[in-house]
Length: 202
Image (cartoon, rainbow, N blue to C red):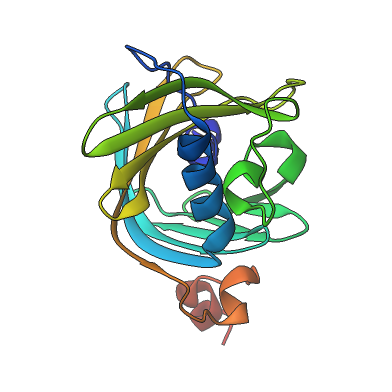
């Protein structure tokens, strides 16, 4: 199950009726990704295997992220800029994930340049209300990321991936707020023990 929730940090979805983005289209995506310094939102995660989860997301650039999944999922993901901690609260299991293992840098980085060499758009679709771009590192190694934006105003609305088990995962954002000051404690992992266990030890 860990792969499914970590997949929320990854993204891939082939886009039908792909078009060729103009320089203006690419610039708009770059400007948004580089200008947003913090992001807070509620999210709903839907998977093609029927699993549904929801929770709250905090991002502070560069490279800090926190995703709190609500019951019955009870998973916490915290990235402090050096590594990402995955905590399954129900199983009381903790593991670390390297940033290099996920394409989170495409969302969390400060200076994203879609130059067609190091980072490129492989699929693109746009209509009056939506812009969809699949972005990946040209040299491979990290899977592609598909970002879905609202056009008015231009803001990130959704991301999608297909995980290694071929499960499609969609994370939709609601009530997004950007560039608010966030407390540093959000991005420090602190394991809180079960209060029942503390009572037993008294």
